[in-house]
Image (cartoon, rainbow, N blue to C red; front, top):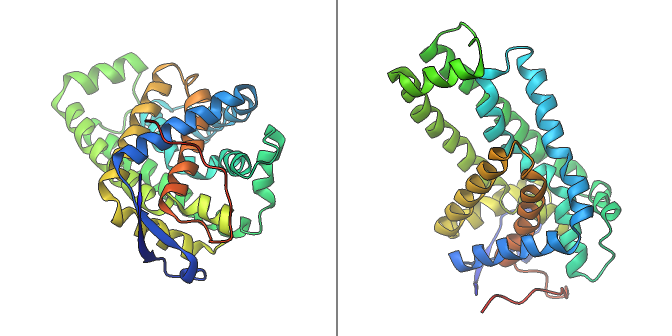
Length: 277
């Protein structure tokens, strides 16, 4: 299990925020706990998770109008950039579970009544800006490499991407650009939203703590990012239906990962799950 390190975040709650070193084992353990949290109340969480694919479709149509094809992949992959904010309901459910409180789905929306809501909205805005920036970069790459003419169909677009040098360049460069955006989001959000919800710290403190936690646990956090990418890809491969399970499970797992990295206050007693043996 993770060993404590006396590193503190810079901000309003600096004296109380200590970060632990974690390992890949801790990451896998957090993911396991996330799925356990989901399966304990699947109907509740599936209801809330339906918001994710619905909002994604609405945003996609709004951004691209009738020509949504060039941005299908950037939307599907890039929408995960604002996933940490969308997952607030799942953080709240896991927080309540470890405190022994009622975990009915309606209490998940108590996150929206948190004193830290303005700070959470602020960080959420940062994620939205990054999301929009990613869509702009993806559109520029597409038009630069494949031309401004919209594809006639999804099949025609996929054929050109997979059978031309320009298409493979788009795949490589586009994924590298997407990875850069994803790493930026991961570093500023891996613990920031759970921290704001749990400790009511400001946006600056939360972001700095998240970056600090990432820098101290670079390899485990990279593994966590790869796991997120793989699971979201699986969800997209099932016509987004898999996201109904995957997104809430990742939300709960993010809470457990936060709990492993940021030491609770000394006066806080929480009910934690046992690690797998």
